[in-house]
Amino acid sequence: MSACKKARAEATSVVSSDRLSSLPPELKGDILSRLNVEEAVKTSTLSSTWRDAWTNMPKIFLRDGNFARTKFVTLVDMVLSLHNGTVEMFDISGSKTYHDEFGRWMRMLSRIRPRSVTIRLNSGPGYRIPSCLFSIGDLRVLHLQNCVISLPRVFQGFKRLTHLDLKNFSSTDMDIQNLVSFCPVLSYLKLASFEGINYLNVQAPKLKRLHVFGDFEDINLDAPNLEAAILSLAHEAKAHQSVPIAHDMESHVKKSLGDLSGIKTLGISGIFMKYLSKWCILTKFPAVFHRLEHIYLVICFWDQRQVLATCSLFQNAPNLKKLDMWDHSSSTLDQDQASIQELTMQVQLDHLVTASVKDFRGLDCEVNFLAKLLSWAPALEEVKIEWTGKTECSMVLAKLLALPRVSPRAKVIVTFL
Image 1 (cartoon, rainbow, N blue to C red):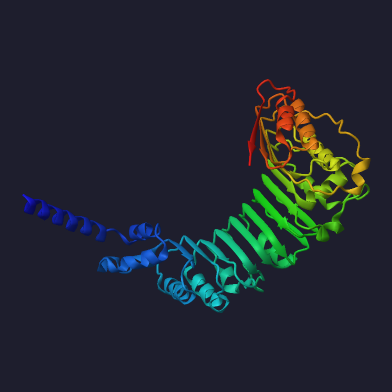
Image 2: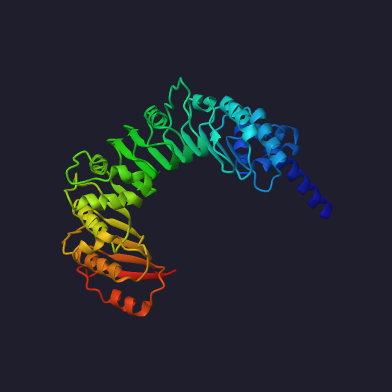
């Protein structure tokens, strides 16, 4: 009986092995894409039919991790030189330096023409992106970190690129302007922590989401289909030339906000918020955001200018449904704060349903703002507070829970971190 069972098991194993071996190359490649590259290459020892299966993997993920540098270089060289299938996604990241090999890898990568490229080699100075990478015409997604971007003299553009994400990079005004404008179907753009860009000119007719965090002096937006924008100036040193004043009708803050009048999500933080607040109380908001439903704000609650700017934004967002705020209160007080009177502005937030405050410290200015918010929102259902301050919480918590609310359904939920 045991001999029969053993024979059946061996027969089943042979059948299963035959089924695996008879799978088409595309399906084998898809299976191997679920493994890391080193494991996928090892499957070449399974049988003769699997020997070259890994060379058809549609997705290639390379991480140096615990690899010795020389072993990782050999692995990348082998994968890029021997791959002969269609590559949907190429993703490489590492914590070691590969400047000597980078140009060779990019030349090999451009020959296999992937549709999505992610490069995150974060050790050492920025990697200069060679011109061959800009010749991959079928590219849909491009994500680069720690790089230097200089477009070739002849750049035809990425006609199919929809997603562009650049972080920790350096470039020039003209190169970034041309890179963006030569991507006619671009729908997502993120530019973070960059150098060398003073005037940011974004011309993207299909753009829907924009995230900019960095040092820039001027910004111009020509994106009629934009739905979500998060804007942040990183340092005051670079932003001082754009300080808007009452008679400055061409204020870049004013113009950029006017260009965003059709968006559904808006995020403002950093020095951009500070300068918006200085301008906002001197002149009218440039637009009414009829479609705006979600606002992110990094705000200093004791800065009454920022509070007034926030209230002005609320007044011009009649359909706001969701509000997320991060408290960024400083330990020092601006000298011009003493002249700002107690907040008396009345705001109607008829459609606001949820609100949250992160990095809550238990300060009186925070509690006072929440009291106003609860009195302005008749449809409010929930206010979430993430408490990170060291202030004695029992009295403040009692005050928070006792705040009157115009909405009978409004709940105040406090989480201590």
